Amino acid sequence: MTDPARTDRAVAVLAGGLSHEREVSLRSGRRIAAALRDAGAAVDEWDTDAALLGRLGSSRPDAVVVALHGGEGENGAVQSVLELLGVPYVGTGGRACRRAHDKPSAKAEFVRAGLDTPEWVALPQTTFRELGAAGVLDALVARLGLPLMLKPDQGGSALGAQVVRDAAELPSAMVGALAYGDTVLVERFVDGVEVAASVVDTGYGPVALPAVEVEPGNGVYDYTARYTAGLTRFHCPARLSGEVADRVAETAIATHRALGLRDLSRTDAIVDAEGRVQVLEVNVSPGLTENSLLPRAVAAAGRDLGEVFTGLVDLAVARGSRD
Image 1: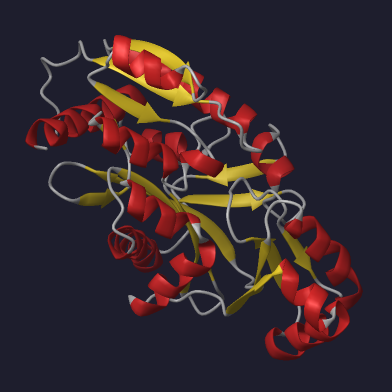
Image 2: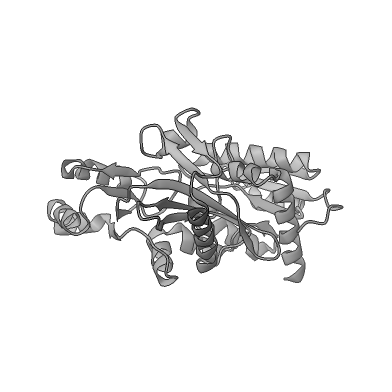
């Protein structure tokens, strides 16, 4: 994948931004910047603010690594600007980012590709106001049953996500999800083993890394469980049979391809009691903090994070030279 002689790339890591996930993004950016420096790259760390375009013009890097989470970092906006400027970058293209970032759109693509995903409905806030919240909530329970998983239709880090086991909890959970967006995604909750399967492009096609099994102490992998050390146990490789582990890997690659993703992604899924892999969502900019899942998968595969991203930088530069 990587020319070992090319360890002197000038790389800009974009982190921060103005989304709800700014602090997590800054932590991801610092970690990947350190890993790339250890691999020999010259790295600048840049926020995505009004000074960004000037920096790209005056100190044009060989490539950019997008370590942004949520908002413009994952919905394709920043990627589209980089494409307009002709700046090579690591990660999925702008249009595919938008498709993956919108959870209902992504789930429709999963179904089209023949992948299993929990039954769902997406409803904008105006629906509850115009048709009456009580009647709509009753219809949700009648159709999907309980428990339910509620989450904003966009965004990550489980912000605004909540499991509802009692119908009386639905109104407050709905308000919590809508605090992070104008539309709420309501899914039938699936019990089982929660796994995260990361995919990295090698230059010869996407390869799945060992899946990480997530075991949150409170039973729900929410924002606190994700980013507070000690609240969640991780098992990598996941404690799955060889057959199921292969199925998880195949599903992650199929998801990556179905959405037209590039370079790297992370598929979050549940392995249910029948051994079916139920795809929940896909992250085009996986976290890279000390508690994140992609670095664990890289280590379990016997690889180094800096080496992996150096290879992805080289792929980005090669794409740029062909454009």
